[in-house]
Length: 205
Image (cartoon, rainbow, N blue to C red; front, side, top):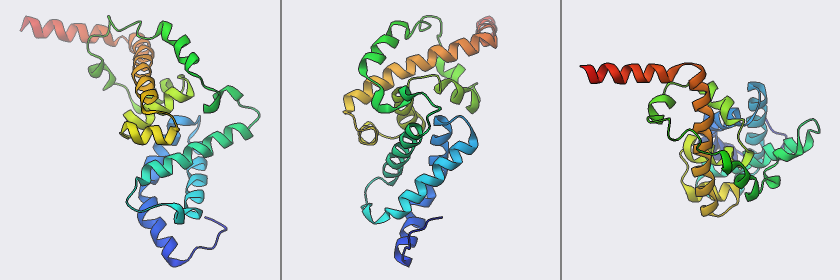
């Protein structure tokens, strides 16, 4: 898995602390990449880097955040190295002004989506992944860390190297953006009629 020679202690430390998080890394990578094989490659490269740097990890701190930081930097490096992908996907290229521009259309369906949690539960993972990929890169990262991986705001801020207040703002706006896009999918599937019918029958009984 790596060309760096590790001693038994380092291998044991990596296996005990880092390896159990592989599934979490793979899930995050699937939300970031276009294909499953890309996600697998990204996670493999991340774990190789983590193994080679295992001595820099301080036991007792957040291993998932440490690994996710490596995953993030690896993802950015891959984007920059691939000339076929747009340069604007880089996290460094995202600015608060981009969020402000998006904000003019955020929440346009808030008054028509009375029970978002009920509808969100009806989406399969792939539908959410597809919609997440339409969001700005920095917004997507914030939602993945806080809502998908259940990372606290402080750890998410450290991973993304931004203030906690920025994470709060991105998550708040990102949730509304996600809800807007999922609303459109739900509408195409006719789910709102289903919800209204269910509510009507419950009132009659």
